Structure formats: structure tokens, C-alpha cells
Image (cartoon, rainbow, N blue to C red; front, side):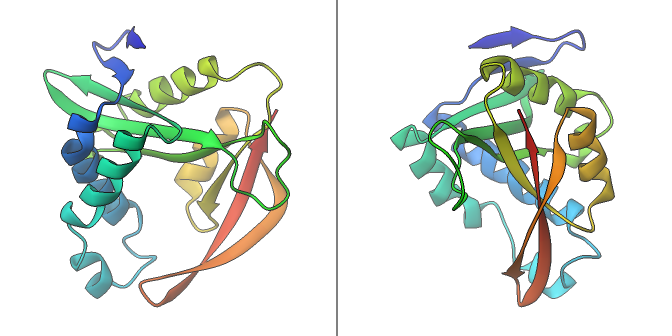
Length: 172
């Protein structure tokens, strides 16, 4: 898969060689997005090496689908999806596992381009879910703009010793 967007961003399928750049973007975005939600002491402990092994394994095993967005040889973001892990999922239901951007790419339309590429790959009417922190209004607004809506299911994840309420969004 390769898509050239209007803003000179190339979206393509990820390869195992992308793991270091994905890990870097994942941690940078996560730290920025969760500042004020999670303790700074916990966020300070996170580095790309904390995600490198996981992303190397995911990409090497071909679990789900992962795409990356690049411009000028630099990774700007990525998205990953596959079979839903929700307890109440039906066969064929999908889940958006992750969509993250380098904070320097926020506001440039890259997340929109990634989401459009994900949704173009999903058959019409296929249910897709995702989980988003209840306090993340920016992310919740983004997902609503792309047809996802809260379905009333919540869970509490403990992250860095802090309880974080997650809200499930669905479309399809």
C-alpha cells in the first residue's frame, strides 16, 4: 500500500525496519498527549527503547495492519489496526489499536490522512472500535469527526500508577 496525500505526505505499509521510528513517534506523542493526565515522573521514564521490542515483534509477526506517514524521509506518524480484542466483539469486528503522530506534525492534516487511509482499507459497514482516554477532548473530537461515537462502554486502566478512564468509540 502506498498513498501520496495532498500535503506531500506518503502513507505506506510499515516494515520491521520501521520499528525504531515508530517507537520514537509512539513515545513522543504519548508523552505529549498524556502530559497533565499522568504523573510527570512516570512520563519521564518513557523512552523509545520502551516500545522498540514490542514494535519489532508486532511488525515481524505481521500482527494486524500498520501504516506509516512520512515526508522528506522522516516518519510523521503511524496507525495500527486489526481484529477487535473487546470481550463482546463479534467475528470480523476490527479495532484501531493506535494512531499517533510526532507532536511536531500535529495540526498538519497527517492524522486525518492516516485515518482516511485506515477507513478506506476497512469494508463498508465493518464495525470498528477504539479506546480513548475520557479526558482527551482533542482525540475524542477527532474520532467523532471520522464517524466514531462513544457506545457507553468504559474501562479503567492503570497507567504509571494512575487510574485512567478509557471510553470506547465505535463506527460501522
